[in-house]
Structure formats: C-alpha cells, structure tokens
Image 1: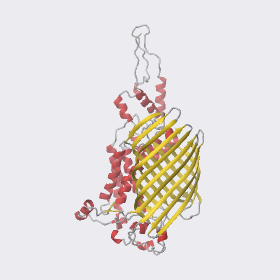
Image 2: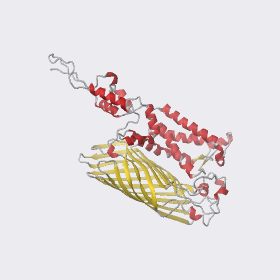
Image 3: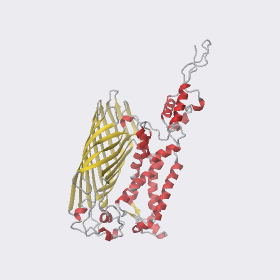
Image 4: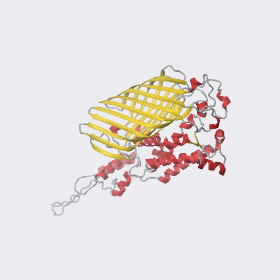
Length: 562
C-alpha cells in the first residue's frame, strides 16, 4: 500500500511549545482555554481514510484542526523572524529622547545650583574653544555622589536600545551618544567633563548589558518570584508588553538553567560602621547574577566557537544597613562580549568548559558619609562652610570603570565534583577616596590641592585592576575564594580649576579585597545556607604621610535562587 504522511518541522514544533509555555501573548485564562481547545480536538487517529483503496491516505495531523486558534507558524521566514525579533530603532530613539528632554529641562531650570561650573558663554568665541580645542577637556569638581551616578545614566541610555532588540554594539552607541550630547550641548556653559564621559559612555555598557541579561533571564523563568523580580528591569518588561501580540516575546532566550547563578541574599553581617570602628551587627541584603547566554554551556558534547556578543554577564548589588542607616552600598557589573568558547564534556559529566576573551567592568563602593562636605551638600564656591581649620573626616568610596582587558574562565567537571577558576585583568579609571587625607590634614593645610581632594576627599586616577576566583563544588556544597587588587595613581594637570592649585602632587591608593565562602544548598529547594569571611585592606599615601586600615567582615545568611 502506498501512503502519504504529513511532514512537520522540528524547529516549528519547538516554537509551538515555547508559545504555549509563554504567558505574555494572552492572559493566563485565555491561554488555558486555548490549550483545552487544542487538546480536545487533537488526535493521531486516521481521518476520512479508505483502507480498501489502493490510494489510502494516513490523514492524521499533529496540529489542531481549529485553524483560527492554531499556534503553529508554518512559514519558515515568519518562524525565523519570531525567534530573532526586529529591532525597534525608532521606538528606542524616542524613549531616549523623552528621558533626555525631561532631564535637560530639569537641569536648565535648576542651572543656578551649578553656578560654580559656569565657565563659558553662548558666543562663537567661547563655543569654538569648547568644541574645537582641548581647553575644555577637564576633570570636573563635582561631589562624588553626583559623579558616580553618571554610570547609571549611561546604563539607562544603553537599555533603551537593548530593550528594543538592538545589538549590544548599537546600544553602546546610545550610551556614548547620550553622554556626548549631554556634555557638549546640554552643559554648554561648562567644561567637557572627562570623568563624566568615561563613567557614562564606558561604564554604562557593562551596567546596561548585565542589567539587560538579568532582566531577560528573570522574564524567561517559570518561577513566580523570578517573574515578579523581572520588574527590576522595567524597560524590558514594558517593551515586552508593547510587543505582546507577537507569537514570541522579544526577550525570548534559551538558557541552560544549571549554568546560571541568580540569587537574593539576606543575612547578618558582623563588621564596622561609618561611626564605629569596632565590629557590630548589621543587616546584609544582596542581589547577584552570573549569566551565561550560550545554552550549550555545561551540556554534554564538544564545542569550539567564537563569539562576538555578550557570552557572560555579572551584576551584583550589595547593601548593608545598621538601624535606620544604609551604611554601605556596592555594585559590580561585568561582561565578556568577545572571545572563544571551548567545551568537551562526556555523558558521565567529565571534561571541561572554557571561555576566554575581552571583557569590561564597572565597580562601585560607597560608605555612609558622616559630614556634610563628604555627603556633597556643600558647593565649592562656599569654602567657609567646609571649616578647613579642622582635620578632614572622609569615608571610603570608589567608582571605577575597568576598561577592556583579558578574561579567562574554566570549569573542570568530574561528577560529582566541579572545579571553577576565573582570572581577569584590566586597565582601570577610578574616582577613589584619598585614604591618607584625613591623617595628612591633621598637620597640613589641604587647601590648594586638587579640587575634588580639597572639597570632597577623592581624586581621579589610573591603574591596574586584577581579580581571580576559585571555586570547588561537591554535590550540594560549594567552597569559593576570591581576591581582587586595585592600585591607583592620581592624574595630574587637568583640574577644572587648575590655576587655583598650588599642590598638584601625586596621590596613591590601593585596595585589596579577599574572601572565602561556604554554601550549602538545601536538597529539593531553591534555598542555600551561606557563611562567609571577607577582608578589605586599604592603603594610601600623600607626600610622606601614609595610612592603612584592615576591615574584617563575617556573613551568615540565607540565599534564594531565582
């Protein structure tokens, strides 16, 4: 007997399954109704066939006969378009323009608050010097809190593009373009701030990409808590809603869940506070994500391929509270967009996964200030309010953009053991607290030093940033250690008020951060018990005066995997 069978495509079947699993196309109630209709009309039985004829046809189907509600995409071009959504460049531009217009209007309305920054007039002569010479390229004199937030402005510019399906390189142009527009056009009265451009344009890239990857991961999760947490990236959430009529949402991404580490931490931290050098009890709260976008990572088989889009991203937010005060705040963002991925894993879970390439990162650490001038509440054009007759009392702070550098990450598998090693190195631009300044000010006048040192306690600097991490897993246990090192030497000669400076000498600072942690995952749950020890060692030097301190931290808490 000659028979004919209906041919269907496996990729289209996968698309259909994903459509049924994704609740954003319609409400949960409508989805349930649709699935019930499909199941009730679904059959593998032969339909309307005649076994007694020579041309008998096995006329069965894997598709619901309800044509009007069929979830199948039978057009290959449409299926490809659904899996790779079209970039919404116009929408991205208008969203960025709306934010920029609001911020620009708000800034110009409050221009008088920044009168100390006014150095240029709206004349051809002044603007020609700003645009076509290096005269206006300076490091500004703003307070630390104002300068580190520029990195998060760049993150927003970047996210407008990424949340509208643009590539990471196109999104980088949004970050860079937004920064240049603000510095050259909006702040036309001021210098063109070198530090703002670095923080916004370059720092916004790892922050924006890691924020995008975390939001996309949470939106693809089946866990209710994770889906709720996806509002941590509202731009991706809102744009996904605008595209809700598509068969697949624009943020659709396939993940190997076992390769991801996204979690919330809540616990106790024993460490000093800004007003008490003796260790005391504090509340620690963190959100961490380490996401690998390649779904083959950690899966049995061989892989050898290059990548030119973000393969790895990391985004960490850390907070410490003591009573009603937020004592510390920290953020870390990293991406590896260029490199090579190698893997050789047997079915017995023996072998390795390796990627290496070029990465970039952003780092922030701020302790609670205890004086008005350290909090940035006083402008530099009111020096009497700073009471320079008294020794300075600054607290530690650092905002750093780690420029492009090499990253190596390798994991060895020998079930049930797993060994992970990671190493990174970057040239780094930082705004770092001059640790020796408090001690130096006891017997020296700090007036006449770099403007940000005199008034706000920090300096602009360059130096190396090195970091390594080693982890060992056995079943539900994980032991991890890390060490990071930063060394900075101040940048000379480009202060906003360079002519005021009488002591433009070199300032040096370094920071060691090391730690050990033990993690036990409760079997059959998303919870883990965590204990950790950390040490932060700081050193600084101004002229002949050196200062150093060592802070010890102990953590005990609960981790919830999202």
